[in-house]
Image (cartoon, rainbow, N blue to C red; front, side, top):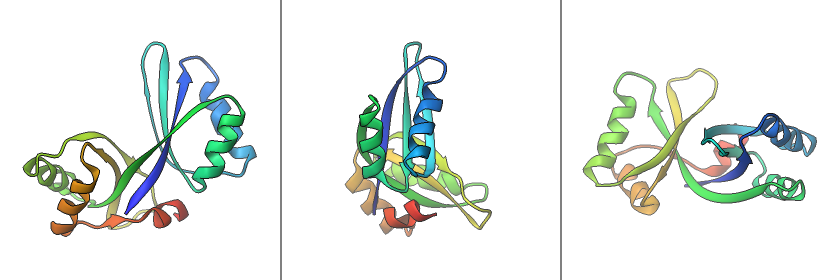
Amino acid sequence: MKVEQISIFLENKSGRLADVAGVLAAAGVNIRALSLADTTDFGILRLIVDDTAKAKEVLKEHGFTVGRTEVIAVEVLDKPGGLAHILNTMRDASINVEYMYAFVQKSGGNAIIIFRFDELEKAIEVLQKAGVRILPGEEIYSI
């Protein structure tokens, strides 16, 4: 049920994001989803890719600091209130959302949102009990 995400710490300077994209492209690694957050001095690029092990290896070979985190991909109704339902479910279970970002896919009836919760196992259990579909990593990596 969990999805592997890699986090790359980047200096906040021109070209660093292009460097990451170029390294991954040269290695044949496809980016499935991403989020970028920055401060004055550095940024954190969070990626879901089709080959996590290869991405970590080539990025480290090129001098990037890379970490691994488990997140979950949740299918959310693509209509008003879809996200509110998920967030209300988490609030009612006292589970905190650490961060989240949307996963881009072809048009369809549902959206996919990547979540990092403070209590990942509990979040999975609560969401499943609420009838929410959690997508396995293999499905996300192959989209």
